[in-house]
Length: 309
Image (cartoon, rainbow, N blue to C red; front, top):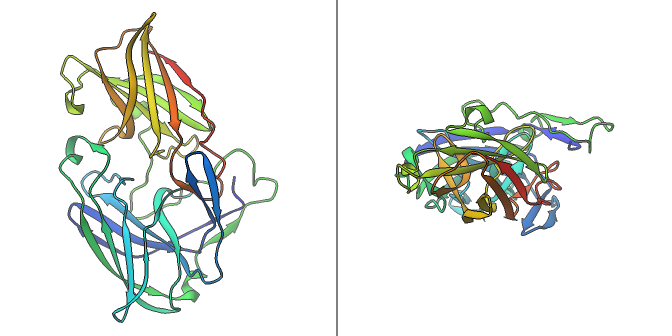
């Protein structure tokens, strides 16, 4: 549990190129950058004005892709104010998002352009043809007095630092970054295992055609999520070994993939799955996302996991 929880406000929402983008903001934040398994704390600077978060989602499915790397340019009256590449982040109230603290020139109206790049993660189904590479333009009226009216609530001292998570915020008109509940995943769900505070759910689909395989092959999917709010955990490196007795049926990476029904997950095409097969899951690198308070120590130490299929 963190020490406090904050709300956020939406400046404006725009649509372009099969995507929607909401320009949201809140108080400046401290957060932790992640490189490999190392953390680096980023403190709030005295001239930080706000924490700016461009939330982008795929219009047809409502999925928030973690691979479009938005670039933000802020101007005022034709003069450049700031350029930033917001960090991919995990927050307990908001889940996955892109964000960064930004310095503005005080109260006033700013022009904000948010550009997204081409996908870098495999996409399937209805997502396969949506290639991004579009720009959203906003008018952002920043007022310090309005910022200070955003909800801020302290967590009781006997609760902060204990196991748990604050509830997801209600984001009207914006999708969440929850992955499907275990019972709602397509295919045959074989159960779940927990490691490093994360929950990994395993399912298999009997037809691997949508994932580059054949109809007589099986698609093996691993869906990691946060344990309390069921947020996706992107930008990991996973590998898997599928064993049948003493034989390895598959021993390779699990490819990050975004699918309309499975959501963001890691998967592989295998020749088939039989009752009694064992799947060993190895986390080669934890989620390479910055962390807001409450997640700064989670999802790092992940030992090898095993699931019986």
